[in-house]
Image (cartoon, rainbow, N blue to C red):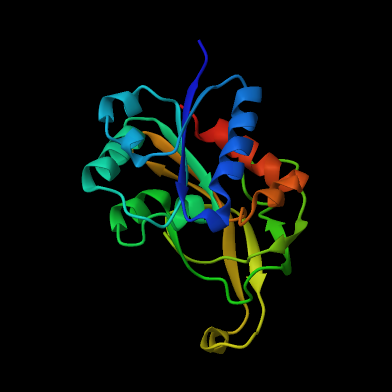
Length: 219
């Protein structure tokens, strides 16, 4: 029986939710998933239907989620349903909802250099995860996300923020998670901070991280 995935896309158009949602649907379909793509948060209304899924993929930047919708997602993941996503589509989804942030493991707070930054994604070599097995460091030209991060996450890839204009640089050079996993009850959580625009996934390593993350997280 095919595994079932629900992609819920929408929110701020600047993150190209239609294009990213379509790309993720293709990845999952190619892996044998039965994929439903929705453009409404009402897809989170039915808690029991969510628990019948194998994977939830949020592609929704900013906006507001109803309390009962968030609770339904949290309960589904706690029961064993995986959740996986990228960039603002998962970790800048609902800025006023701390429960969503608790589930997903981080919250975007800044991109000090804005878009078009050349930076390196460094694979954590000691990471004992199939998601990064055999992968090498790679370069990206995109936004470099500054996140507030749950200390419980298992960091699989990082990036380095150098000194720049801004008060944050008083802290010196810092290392920031880019890819991580965590657990929520019986469920698995995967996040990749890349994905400002869909074309980031033209980079083979960025796309492969999403593919492996989906497969790892899915119940």
